[in-house]
Length: 392
Ligand code: FE2
Image (tube, rainbow, N blue to C red; front, side):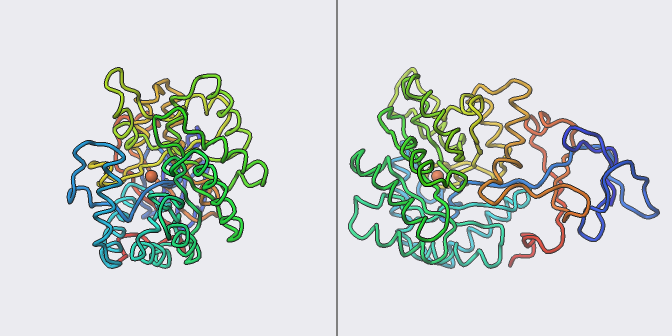
């Protein structure tokens, strides 16, 4: 097939796909019988750096009445007690299919280490979905419940891609900091990355991101570290926030904002005025820090909505983050196929000879993707992750 006069990386080009590979990019004439797709925008496929597939599609079972993170955690604890491996697998496959239909083939999921059937299901699914990564996530901390630390270590050893933690949920600030260091130690022992739920609170006293930065810098592993949420950064006093933003840039870790969840989960103790519950994306960008955008929840006890369309998350981010400048909207969309791929080793290349792993959008400007959120046409090469339609 031939994409004719499509926008790619700021230029207008023709791009031919043949035998699952990109056969040519340039000024190309259509061959006899070739399918021609005129105009539009070409990008790499998208990547999801932060979701919870074990809880996905359970949101209607136990609605979160208060809308708080704490009630979500309590509801999840009730739900997970009744989960089976087969149920988790079935919901994860359905959700992965939703992601694939919206152009995301690489998905990093957290799995609650207190739920062994969920860990078995999601780690098991990696065999049929090479784009799937699993983070061992202790939903209720590793230090506040007897046995949690051991179960966390066991799930990591089952074959996870990163070690998670939830330092702001531990009992004390000191135990939170200890949990961050334990996560780095465990990751080092297994030769894998760290992916924290970090300071997902409005409490300006929640100071775990700077500890993660210091650990990443001292151990020289910043490129393998992800800090999700980081909403407390929003509420830090500005001089302290400036120091932490600089540290994030220096450490080179990836901060993943989850605007769909956090705009509704945070600010619940505020009354009015009510904070937005989003990390400081504009300041992180200005400092040269790496920022990803996650969907986080797809119809689960924390967020009743969600479509697995990452452009929805970018759309929310530009609103809540005051990022409606033209370049900011474009950057928010680009994040989905650039920084979001960092936990997976970087975006799939669009160049001659590479496997054809790309999306075609029926618009000619990235801003229009965010405004209209159209469904992309997905082009998959040979030998890549299985098309989700083929997964039984
Ligand atoms: Fe999360």
